[in-house]
Image 1 (cartoon, rainbow, N blue to C red):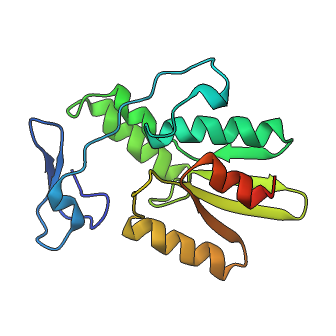
Image 2: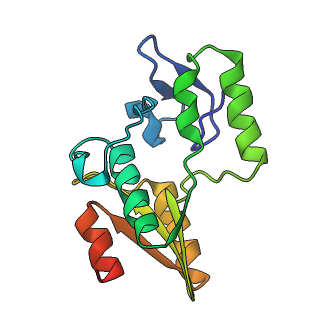
Length: 162
């Protein structure tokens, strides 16, 4: 298997962490796939934002849609949680999504409003952007689009001015 960041040889540990053979790659610290969050039918105010970024994303999408705003999720790789580290379908899944246009570092949401298209990255309170996310942000901004990082519903409300 190749490291998704530097394309060097990589292997998985017994704990499911990706280890890269390159001494300079950031994956040497290990990247563990996130588990798929449980779906909920509770209103967005009832979900705790201190949980995962996925919990925040559910809330953000509900808030945007409640205000008539289109939000397109680009989170296709969370599907990896359904495959074990050694399942050959896992690698087929990754390759399929790369061929379909998935870009490492792409934003979590594309927000579409009249006269506005914005790319939104969702992070926990102290979450940091990866090198690929920063590179994606620079490309988006160079093309003249807005890129924003939301850490809470209040950030979204401030951005929407509601």
